[in-house]
Image 1 (cartoon, each protein chain N blue to C red):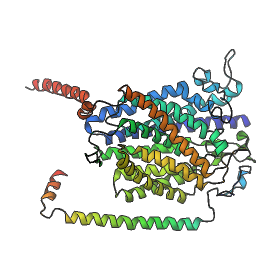
Image 2 (image 1 turned 180 degrees about the vertical axis):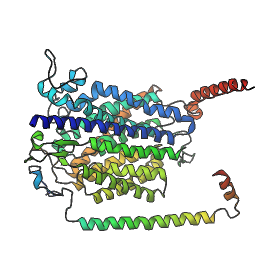
Image 3 (image 1 turned 90 degrees about the vertical axis):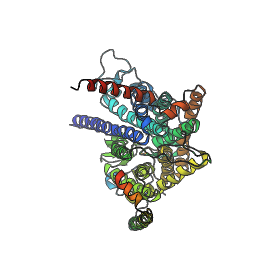
Image 4 (image 1 turned 60 degrees about the vertical axis):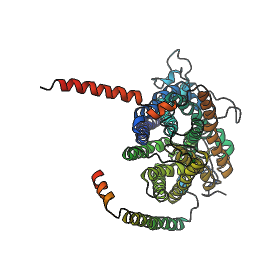
Length: 465
Length: 72
């Protein structure tokens, strides 16, 4: 009976994560629609392909090394211990393929314990984390539209999606991560580990890249470049909202017994947990997701004077700003955080644009970067003194730990991306030439399209009798 | 001391109730939430009034309105 219960739990968990992967794909559909909606007509196709090709590139690199980084680096290494052995996550291990619960005779690199745990969970865990990776990379994509070279973005997408974010997840979003152990870092739904790091990377890219031609007037004030299709932007953002349900669910462990956690929890009550294996419920995150989204949209409507682009973006920012603590907040707290933080981020977006001439076409640095950063900082105060983990000896959640963690996340996204962009720029691989930017990056594609339409039209007309 | 009264997870979950911060201030939070909601309607109405006033003040001749009808 116990064996059957364990098997059912494993299969339920496998199916649960599989569903979250399907849902999270909607985030990427949303990002593509959103970016194309914001871009001008002469840049649509390259904008679409730039974002879409992040999917296969991050997927294969996350298979090759990203998944292993998550399990290998929770100690730093060198901060709370050494490199952790994780054979089941190595690309050449048999558990990174179709496998059942035993160990075949002569099979190397697979222990009975690893096989029993990972044979059904490795692929779906990998897939769920991969979708976080693609999301993180994709956040950078929107900021740089209409002038960045696609190849430059794809290199940065692999850096951010398959190295940087998963490294910070290993540190601060892992049951044994050193930031959790030593700093009491708490970031349950990835305000910092996904959004702040992506915002930092986007800001670095934008600084090296420079603004779009025509974005700033000769006197230095900014011109508005409105979205070409506000309906596409709206549907894109609503698809991102929808996909975020999968994102939130995938941040939880759906069902686990206190004995399996083997921490301090006593009794027989099984529970869902956050990524740190501390108890929470799907009901809690449902309350808080919707209340923080609503707080963001209501505040966004007021501060932007009813602008649809910013109202919906601030809804997303509301979720992001409450995500660090949405496993533990009261819904009204989530609503107020989701209203106040996005209002600050909106003001910061325009301040940075005016002061530093940063042309962030979709406001990603504000929504994800500042929203994620401030969300982590707020969680440090709101959850002050609470246990960060069910394991003994971990630091408690505290403002300093979360502030330092938020800085680390933003900087970890910013510095490596800045260096890589500088190198690409020095090789003329970062930005398209001004002539191409003015023509539109789809210039040749549009010419070929028009020529094909003309040729077919001429042939068809010749057949009219 | 912690904001939700929990110092560790060394507990039996069947004995634990609410775990959100600042328990006991639910009524205050609801009042703040209601003020936020009502305040939103006040601000939204002011904004919409200003918008309508601007629309009313624009296009005294009706020419732009005719163009808008054709365009949209």
